[in-house]
Length: 294
Image 1 (cartoon, rainbow, N blue to C red):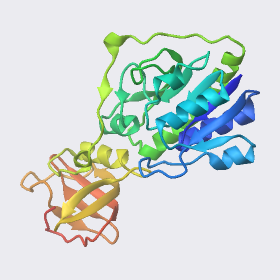
Image 2 (cartoon, one colour):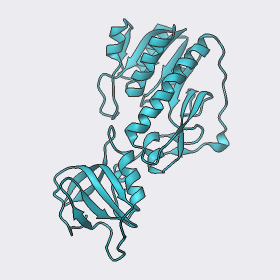
Image 3 (cartoon, rainbow, N blue to C red):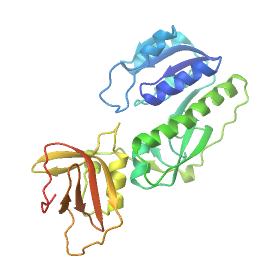
Image 4 (tube, rainbow, N blue to C red):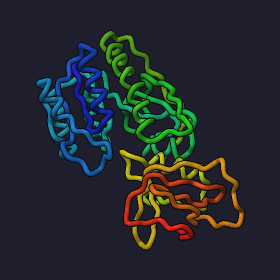
């Protein structure tokens, strides 16, 4: 089975290595982006391509991809970790179609920033889903789906790693099943479909009137490799990379949200809408002082 592989992020790299090291499938070409200002987890695939002697191109535009697909004549396309919609001429060309990946329990939670929204919304579980690409994003038939539990203290990086571990096993099995013609397609139930929108910078702004749990989830969701949650102090943007809820202290009802109630050597504690949260790791031009308001 001849695979044309498309991707440019960490998951793309992990899944590609899994296929190369654990199956007999033939990767006949790799499409990647050597440079990207878009993906926080950007990892180009050209070094792997050169290591394994696989033809590759640095993506420039849709027509380049259409032309190269026709030139390589793949049996199937794998497109994992790609920020562009594939032209119809690309995913309709291979006889076995094209397979994509989305880290939610499709048909629920299609769309943008799935890891971030999963944590921000406090979901207890998500999914690792491989599916057939069609003209509507994240809507094609499912070929493999696994439930992934989300811990209360989950961060973006820890959830990403969980998804990679599960997805790695899945793509090995999916590839073997496709090669043996033993795969099963399951249509998505459109009546159950939901969509997540693109996140804006304002979605990462900490409002200290929020509950401590909501702030905690926001910080975890936007932790590295993502851009970080932030607050603004004296017109400066301060990134918050790590925080914790103080649940074992008495809450004083006469303290306004946003007031710094204590400062330690490497942390400071702020009153929230319902409790207190300690900021442990932060970045920016800011020296916390007890009694200041954020």
